[in-house]
Image (cartoon, rainbow, N blue to C red; front, top):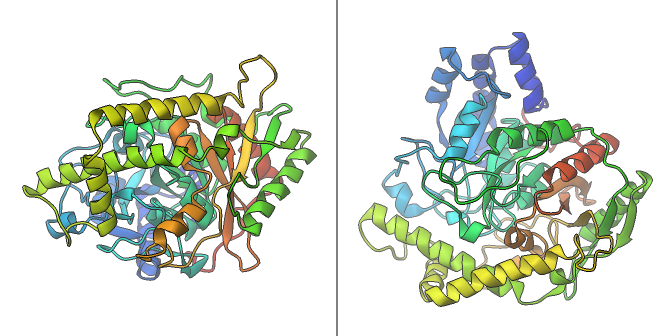
Length: 479
């Protein structure tokens, strides 16, 4: 039996050497899911028979993860004929299945990954806790009374608990980084345009959303990014290609970096453990010889970015709801969708085309103001990396963010540092560098310049080597 603590790269090496077969890995992963999923509710659509057939066929692609078990989030990464219900009661009721395969799902398959099922997510991915009314909450392996984050919370719980070594995730406002933070994982949001949204979509949420993975190691993250980062035919734009494979950046020298720490920003009440995580990280970075100071872009202190973000999300939600109505052949109402999404769609439908374009322009202008910290207009030296808490607080209790009266205000207390970089399109990664006295994970976010994934991977692997996290496992973990 393969050790459940092994990362995806190690499992691929075992398959390549003939020490284990893809089918053996798949059967072991299915056993772990069946043992742990009744506790965590991470996998909502098992696809075991198709996975067994693929693993046994001998036809798996000779990709970098050949034979490695995998899970896909039930929001994008759709595969033809399989459930695609996005946390939505109306789509669950009709057992909606995707008529097509998304390009990112095809890329995962070309990498040799074997998809065992689809993971839980909040309805339409529109909040940062995975507690959809249609499928119930996903519980955190570190403490089952707490949230896994969202919207990739099902994937994060599955990886953190050792069901699979890596799983699909996506991020429109923090939805890779936030679950990574709350579940003690590595979560990299790639640059805008790095991963295709094809074949049905050119850009999601005005370019703010992007696909990726959650993992337990930096090298898995880098290898997976290599596997999925290529433009598809007809994509409207794409990120500049890297100078060499991202996997080659793991362990490569970083040079001396100029790093800014932002343990808090103007007007924010950041939890002491989250501030402590950033300052402790700063001391570690100084030990590496990097130049570290408390500094952050002035744009992070601007109060109005959130209004632009919410307007774009509302329009995106309205578009998603219209698509659901096309599938159903009728208008939706209470019982079909949760109240928050019905309200978001109502707001989005009230935004005129002119106002929507003004919001897109405002988003791009915000990105230019943010970028000035990395690339000052006067030619003076800029910074290389920004370090922040991933979240303003540790993982909250289940139900804390879904409270009908307090949930919205509480969400604002957590989501202080992530969505800005969906607006700018910059890459950002959350690393599992801290835990509260109660043992809850607290992630630290590293933000790079535009198209700067290579730099982030080099720095993340330097940190991983000095402060490894792989041997620290949650109480709920595969045996």
